[in-house]
Amino acid sequence: MTSALAKSKNTFYTVGFHYYLCHRLKGGGMERIMKITEKNISIITDELSRDFETASSILSMLDIRKIELRNMRTGRVPYISDSEKEEIKKYISKYNLKINAISPGIGKLKINSDNLKEKTIKHLMDSIDFADEFGIEKIIIFSFKKKDIEDKTEVIPKFAVDIIKEIINIGKAHNKQILLENQSTCYVSTFDSIIDIIEQINDEKFKLNWDPYNSFQIDKQPCGCDMKTLVKYIENIHIKDGEYNKEFIRKPIGRGMIGWSKILKQLMELGYSKEITIETHYEPLIFNTIKDYDELMKLLGLKTDYMQTIMNYS
Image (cartoon, rainbow, N blue to C red; front, side, top):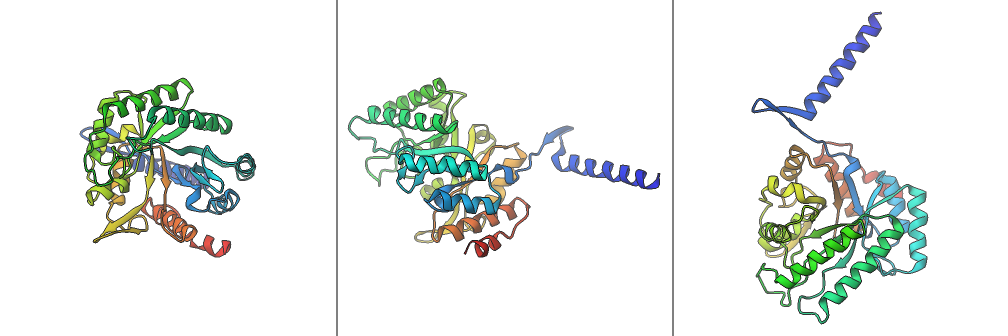
C-alpha cells in the first residue's frame, strides 16, 4: 500500500512538474510554452553528403528522421537521374525517413532573365511532379536574384510579386505548401523585406522558410526581428551561424552572432512547433553538420555528445 501511495505521489509530482514546464502564469492567464525536441529537427541531406546512401546512414546514427532534399549526385531536385530517385526511395524505406521539404531553386533566376515567368512555372511544375512521386507537401522557393549583386534595393518588382502569387495559387491547386526563403542575393532578404512581401502577397496560405543567417549577410547584425509578427508565417527554419569581421566566417550553431539562444527561447514561448533544419554550409561537411546538431541539442537542453557518431562513422 505504501509503495502504491509513493508511486501515486511520484506520478502526481511528475505530471505537475511537466505542467509547470509547459505553462506559465502571465497577466492572470496561462501562456503555452512549446518545447522544441529532436522530432522538430531536420537536416538538408547534402550538408552530409550528396550521396543519399551515405547521408541516410549518418542520419540513422543520429536518430534523425526528417530531411530536406536539395542537391544530389546527379543534380538538384527535381532534375536528378531515375536511378538516383530509386536510391532515395530505397533508403527512405530502409531508414524510415520523411522528406519534410524540397528546395529545387525555384526563383533563383536573375530578375532580368529572358522568359522569366515561363521558365519559373515550368520549374515549379517539374518540382510538383517530383513532390507527388515522393509524397512531399512543402516546396521552397526564392524571390529572384537581383540583376546587379551590388544592388541594395529590397523593393521587389510588381511583376515578380505576381509570379510568386501565381506559384502559391498553383501550389494550392496541387495541395502543395509553398515556402518563400529569404536569401541575401534575392529581393526578399532582410526582416523588413520579408514583412513587405507578406503584406503584398496577402494570403494566409503564404508561409516562410526563414533563414536568419541569410539576413545577417545583408545587415551584419544579430537577429532583432519582431518574432511575434513573424512566427505565424514560419513553416520551416534554416539554422546556421556565423560572424562578420571584415569577412563572413561560419561558426557552430550558437557560437556566432545570430543569437540562436534568444531566437529559440522566443520561438518556444510563442508556441513554434514546426521544423528546424540544419544547413551547415562549411567544410568538412559531415564533421561540422554533426557538430551543429550537437550544439543545437545543447541549446535546446537535450541529450548531446553526438561526436561519438563521427568516430563510429570514420
